[in-house]
Image (cartoon, rainbow over all chains, first blue to last red; front, top):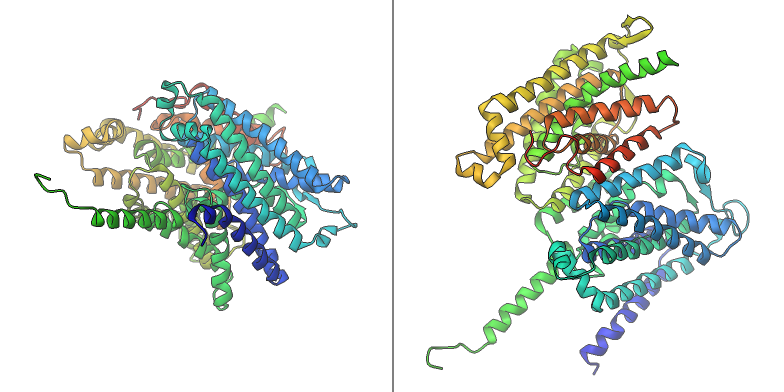
Length: 334
Length: 288
């Protein structure tokens, strides 16, 4: 019989393998549907990490996602490996995120104003892409390698999907290690009360910058997966701040209190509308977005901690009740 | 070149007067009631469609269309109030719930009005005034003056009336104001009502020169938030100044910068303001 500790250790490996098996047996068109969801899930892993570690809600994740997409496709078109492209995306996103975080910390831009500052930066970059010919301008760039025009179609979806699932799990485990380390404790102190943390000598500035850098790097990996899957990147579709909103919404849908809640929530929220419309083909074409909005409102009004966060909370409170019920009753004189 | 600069400056100022009404409406919600409303632009979209169908399909006079738009916005604002009340003061939840409301409104707009981009084919914008070499569309001038009058009226109400005093007290310290008998519900409904009137009138002013589609909401939300943050949250004067700065920057910038790049001037101004004066140009802690 496996002990609980071993189950915890090998559980993610089993889950990852199961996810890959399920992904492989899916029909091709469903693989194409699942891939963007997994890409967004990777990005939401980064987003939720930053919000847990630094307490910051950033709307620039669409930008980092787009940087990842552009870097992967541009590098591949230039004849470099996709992995080099992913690495370039990580470096560029990390630098941009680090600079934004440095500036916002320097000028004490916090809370909702931090969110607006990150949104403003995304809009500025989007406008530069759209209004100048930079990296293909409004039309973006098509993945031409390997194998000529639209060669992206030759990218093996099974390989891409399996690799992205493995990446998602590895990054998740990395985040768990990080959050359980000494730095994790310091990050938690910042997220709960930044001023108090600074008061007891925590290096708030650098830890917040690192949280932003790590989150953005992870999001750019998700963007690379999305770009390689789509085979085309364009500013409106790839670095739009509406992607940042989608990452935020998916993360909150799942919950932000644990590493896998946000990615699972993002996958769920991306897949639910499609599943409903597949089951009920008579629904109007835009019903997917309406279902998406309704899911969001249900979570906001009924499940404030996200779907998985609420489940976790109810399990914990049930266990607490059971423990209290089993505990011996202390009476006077005992 | 000088004439072109003068022309875009005049156009920018007229648009700023109209957008000032929208910024004041948002400021009452965001700066005074401290509710984050990311569906604000979608409210504007609904109001624009109301005016569009009232004038375009039902051939109603524009003034009546404006009344209908204000009535529609009052209803939408009341529903919004019912929606945000259970969320409390958690800004993260407000932000997400209003994103959700925005998405729903956008898709309801798609279902009811159709996804295509529409412009009002009307004679309203055909007559112009000429001041030397500068031409001004007659309708826009009148609409801008009406919006300016509305904004001044809101300012007077805020500074001189009993309701304004209560609203300012509420903005300064909600708990203390309630101890002195300020009714939270009345204050919130009153502020949302004024905001609804601002959206309805601004939509009537904007439509003849603007296109409308169900997806325009979020862009306007971002633009109007920038005006409010630049001017200073919780300050009506700040919202007006913010609208003027943003519209002038975009109008004059469009002379030299292609596409949507003039928006980047606004983004730079916003970032500079956030860096140097996070409360905005006119925003003090309890300014109204």
